[in-house]
Every structure is written in C-alpha cells, then in structure tokens.
Length: 635
Ligand code: WTA
Image 1 (cartoon, rainbow, N blue to C red):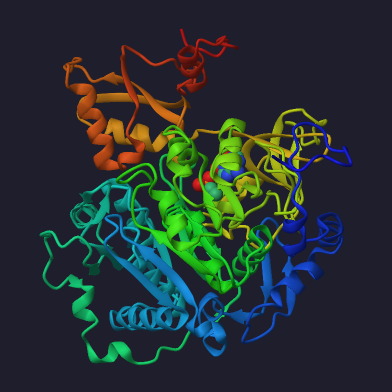
Image 2 (cartoon, rainbow, N blue to C red; image 1 turned 90 degrees about the vertical axis):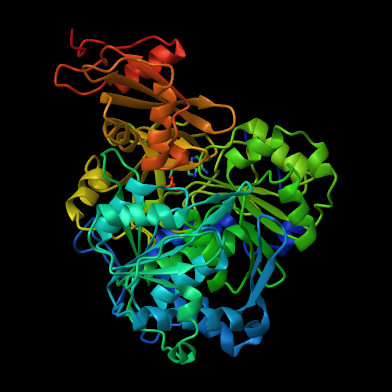
C-alpha cells in the first residue's frame, strides 16, 4: 500500500510519493519553486521560455497594459513547429520515435520518428500551400483518430495558418457552424473513421455540413475506411492523389511567427447557443503547455507516453500533439474505443508498448472499472510509473481503483484541472506531491488560483465558492474569435482583476483545491463539454418541438448524462417513436455524444417571469431535492 504519512502534517486521506519517484523527479521542492514563480512571475516565465527555439528573442515577457488582454513574449518570433519538430532534427532525437499508432482492429501499427514526422508534415504543408492557404487563414480539420490528424494540425502551424479542429464525434450542424464561424476555405477530413468496429461516415457528414454554409472551396480527404463516398468534382481531392504531385516533396520553410500570432481556434461550449472559438497563440501557449507537460508528467527520453483523449479536444491539442512533441517525447495513439473488442484493450496495449505514463479521463476509468479487476490483472502493467486524470472531478472510488489496480499502488496520480480557455494544466499534483483522492491538489508554478465568494473575497478553508485565477499566465486564451467583448464579459466580468473559470470549488486547510463542477449551463458528459443551449437549439430545429430544456444529471460512468424536457408544437402529440426520433435528430445535428439519456414531453416548462427557463428547478425536481427559491417562477 501507500507510503506511511511520516510527518503527519496534511489532513485527510493522504498518499505520499515513494523515494524512487522523488529521486527521479524534476521537482524536488515544489514549495520553494512555486514561491519563486509567484514572487517574480516574469522572471520565472522568461527562464522557462529560454528552453525553446526563438528566431528572435522577446523584448518584454508580459504586456499587461490593457487587461484582460494580456500579451506574452512581446516582440519574440518563433513557430511552435520549430520547437515541436525542427529543433529535434539536428539532435539524436531525429531517429527517435515521435508517434506509435495502433488501429482499432489491431491489424495496423504505424510508427513515425521525428524525421518521418517532419517528412509527412512537410508534404501536408506543401499541399496546403498549393491550395492557396496563407498565414492567418483558418483551416478546419474534421478527422478520425489517425496520424494524419496530427500531420494536418502541424502542417497548418508550420505555414502560419491556424487550425480549427472539430472533434470527429460531432455531426452536421456542429461542424457547419464551426466552419462558418472560422470562415474556413479549406476542410481536411477523411472518408470515415472506425469506432467500435463500425464506420463513422465523416465525409457524408462533411458534405451535408458544407451544403449548409458557403465558405469551403477545397476539401482534402484522407482515405481511412475505403467505403464509397461522394467526392465533389473540383472541390474534393484525395490526399493520396495529392501526395503524388512532384512539388509535394520539396522542402518547406517553417514560417516564423510573432509570439502573439494565432496558432489555433478551438470551439468550446458556453452558456449561449453558439460555441465560442477560443484562441491560442504560438508563443505563450507553447511555453505554458511544454512547461506544464515537462514538470507534471516528469517527462524524459525513456518515456512512452499515452494520452488517451481525442486530439480534437484541448487535451489532445496540448498533451497529445504539441506538449509531447516539444519535449521530444514518444507518444502512443490508439484509434478506437477503450473496450473494443474486449475490456482489456487498454491494458493489453500498455503491456504491448511498455507505456510509462497514462493520461485519461475519469469516465474512461469508471467505464473500465465496471468490468472488474480480472481484465487488467491479466496484463503486466509494470511499465507504468505515472497516471493522469483530466476532464472532470475524479471520484475517490475510481481514484483508488486507478491507483491500486492499474498503478499497483506505486504510481502517483496527477489529477489535472484546467480548461480549453486556460490552454494548459492549472492545478495539479506533480509526481512528488502528497495526494488526496479527489483533489487536484495545488496550482502549477506561476499560477495564482483561489476560491472567491460572490463579493470577490477569498472563502474560508473548506468553504465552497468560485474558482478564480488572480494573475495572468502565458497559456491563457487570447480571446474569443470575432468577439473580444465576450471574452472580457464572460471571464473577467464578475471580478475584473481575476479570471473566473465557471467552476465551483473549495480549498482545504492545506491549500489543496477540490473542484466540484460547473456553475453554468455547461454539462460534462463523459468528459466532453457540451452546452445546454446547443442541445436545446438542436431539439427545437426538429419540426415537432416548440421548446426544450436540457439539464445534466449524475450518471455512474458518464459523470453527467443529458436529460431533456420538450414542449411539442400544436398539432403534434407524443407517439411511441417520437422520443427515439428526437434522440436521432440530436445525433445527426450535434453528434452521438450529445444524445439525450432521457426525453420527457411536458405541457410547459418552468420559467422565470422574464421568460428564462428554470433549469435549476428541473434539476431539483428530477433529483427529488428541495426546489429552493421559487419567487421568480411565473405562475
Ligand atoms: C472540468 C478540459 C475537476 C471543469 C481540460 C472545467 C475538471 C472543464 C478537471 C473544462 C479536473 C477539467 N477536476 N474538473 N481535473 N479537469 N474539469 O474545456 O469543470 O473541455 O471547467 O477542458 O472541465 O473542460 P474543457
């Protein structure tokens, strides 16, 4: 079992790191390094940034003259690809594996050294250039979990274009509105992807999405499934055909960018119907994610690292693609579902590839835990040295299973709290941090997090409040695409000098953070972030629905599941098949991740006198809890 609490200072259920972990860690003394990073943040980030290649050094570390619009490494020039690929090519890492990929069927393994990765990215970059993609353009990428997804992202960055990756589990309307908002002229997709042995028809979804908006001129299609798809002449090109063009193998310069130039847009759900395009840059984002990656995972050359998230979400951007590559790590990527064809799939691959670090979502852990210990126990998991968790709070029961059964009570668990907007990990244990199951523990270097009450005062230890960050950090988003005001209002509107995350949390006597969950209308379903407004607008786009309300209710595996209440239009009445039809409609518009668990037909929805749906009341009723203050309820 875990090491004994020898100095007995921390309160609660505490797990201490072993001497071996401490000896091998970059961080021997969190407290003094944290103190230094907070006392002189600019000096700290300046030092961190010096680890990377810059074609021109910065003049100023932080420009905070116009809060909350902060700029980092002002005047500096680099490209995240110069650091993720180019700089490794002149070192021993040139022939080191960057990526190992396994197909869902298990019949294909593809590996890429840094040298090979550079070749693939260069070819893809030349294709994009040939299509007229220029610095500042936003290319939309809608792909299954295959290596070409990474090549496409890196190719965009290399030529100075930004990418907007749309998760391959999203469907027609989600894709269409993201393409539209980004004004993308080029879309990169695949014929399809494999998930649980079935084909996800990405190209057909893409065709429908393109028909709903008017910006796409060219589509690059990677062949993955090989099933028949409609290719629009003059618009759609097979990737393998383009690879046959002679110019493709020419060298391609990595465009040097200003530190503050756009690297990518990633759409995420908020409180309003339209998802917002969160913006990240080449300079500050790069420094922040690579520093967090290095110290939180204690990454070094011997590691085989596996982040089991999807590259289409921020975890994938920061800790599948960019962070690991900048640190020169070897990553593993798996195409399909965790329990395909059997519940030992993950454990089998950990054994097969000698994975040392596994970074996964609590929902996946809970899902696999359900099948019992026998599945992991069949495999030799002794290569693992560190486990990570991300996306939602991890319940102590799942934490302990992960720790004892998967980590054999030897691997620390870094429970990492962060958001699309924060760019990288904000609150997390380091491998040397004493752990408390369910707590993300303490802020990363340079991060000043706190819990505020509604008046902006720090709460007392143990008291619940709003999670805030009181000082800027290099990974903070630079805004919302086309909507600077929304950035300011939503994140700095309440406390002007502090970033408000939208999460409820408390801090205990030891300064450990316990994140409770979202305070707004965002639902975390299996770790995926969805807005109630998106689900509701998908429902009302169905001819039978006049009004809809979506709420999240606790679910054993998913964390939260979506429950919806709908009011039908006149002339429509409840039939046996209507519920199923509405679920399918949500699948088709947003994607299977948004499929409601339960649909209830109502004659009316509870609303405030000003017409706002009272989701809080629906939730309380569904959970059989007290209904609270109903004074604003319309009669
Ligand atoms: C939640 C995912 C508790 C939180 C990286 C946050 C977490 C939202 C944790 C952001 C964690 C993420 N413990 N809650 N370790 N990690 N969250 O943008 O509610 O998809 O606000 O970023 O996930 O979700 P997003």
